[in-house]
Length: 96
Image (cartoon, rainbow, N blue to C red; front, side, top):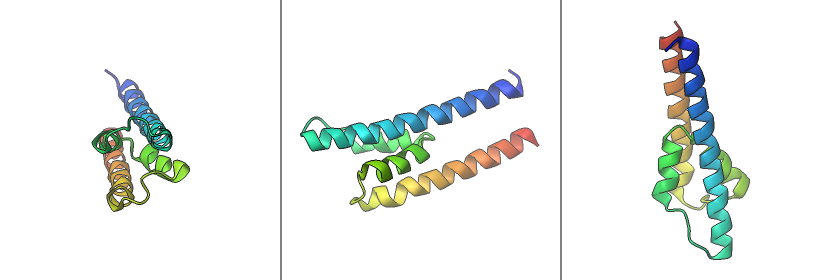
């Protein structure tokens, strides 16, 4: 596999995970309002931890969801910062 393919796959994974994370936050908020089955918190954390940090943080802000839980307010932004750092270091090591 060449470098451009690896970069394309990595970008696709990050984009997909962020879309899924954002969508799950919106879906869970909608279910909460309607009294329906909810997405487990560990599932929200898992998707966000798997390079969906931006989607999770944006989902919290846009849908005003999980903002009362300190562990979401703290760990979602921390996960995003760690993911940015990992991607930056990985890109530097891979491309340099």
